[in-house]
Length: 591
Image 1 (tube, rainbow, N blue to C red):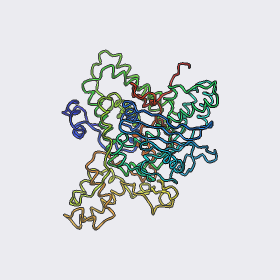
Image 2: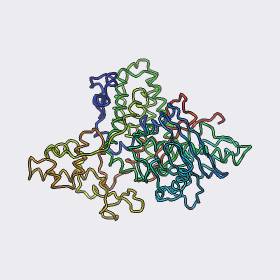
Image 3: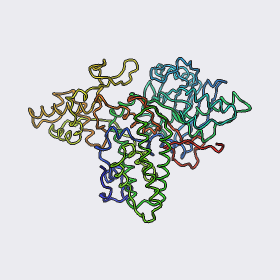
Image 4: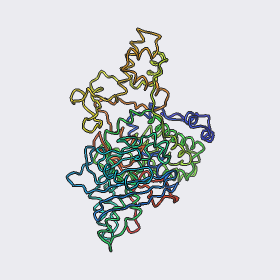
């Protein structure tokens, strides 16, 4: 249960005037025991702090200039395109190659070796020599090689049915039917976006320190997907004009904004959340700080206008969830339940608007009611909507989403103190009974073929000898038991002595000592349980990316949509409302 916001002695103004650390300390943040439950993390939705949202706000506000000095496509849409990007602090080139892809070779899995599009985001301008180098290597993806001028490497496949439908309608002089587009929501789907030094590209340290425009986490990767979206619509317009020079029309701007980029995310993303606990701690702490800021802001009272804005957002989410197409029964049922509960919230907000006697309301009461009566995903949708109500108060937190990932052993700490830390901070791990078969029924390993993470069944699948150390709860338990035995035979010793005797525990000791100083970061779940749902890990990270429309295909991978509803390049420099977090079908003037 969240802490009562009235128990803080600091006013909202004084909190905002102090440092981020002091603000976080004073605000009524929810405890890790509540937030870091896997099901709750898997119920997160994008917020104003998600990386797509912050990137788009930056591009619009700074009016990035994006031109295409090379747009060399043939009548079938194949060829080379180079976009030049003039951002606030630097110049970049987005180089794209459009290829013919035999239908028999169309494959969205990581094992694919051919794609409709391959792309690279590069620093500076690209000369003829570098363009030839990229033309040789970018289409090969992992089989090629990059240099440090390349920031991101990516590829994408066409949603053939939707793409051809859109181009054919435009060719005939008609706008595509919104309902047909809504079935998929995109023209292309990306299957990977590599950065941070892979394949010889610029590492994160270079990107962060040299290229301020992309110094936030995953900003360059998100921009790469945004430009893919731009090209997908530009290519559709281009092909329609080639096929029908006298009849073709361009895609309506509202349809362009509604179109996003498809994405499928599998187990490859899951280990990131476990292997980067300090970064995950920072992401979640800033999100929780934004929520707590909204709660504290309401202590002075919520006016009718703010209530009305929440009601409009509630209606939008209800429509958004109703428009999601998924065959997954769990997600389908969840969407139905959330819509029903949000409908109840909508009716309540309508009553508040009509009741002139209501003069004071605080969001803490709404949050508490939701926690006591509604589904966890409904709770987190409401939390997202509350954050959206206070952009002036929370948007500054977007600069605090980074963290240095460094876990260090504190050798002088006594073993008894470390035991106390584990009993306090890792009580959730000690509560798991690992003697049960199901508690150790799964293991994580990396496939030899593509070095991608996989999930196996203990004593059934091969590869247990190469298990990845992702079962943090089990590692904590094993280390704790060993520490207790060591402390009973060698009292008054410090951690250095323990590690000298038990070097295999140095990694988990460093993690526990480091994470004891943070509020969040460790996921409070047995990740090697036979019934573990990795899809919750994927959804959590994707929510910070800023995706929407989750469509699970199994417990191991999920489809989603990126940048659906986002502003277009033509919107840069304009005064727009950053309200596209739950995209809904547009209504065109001709419909």
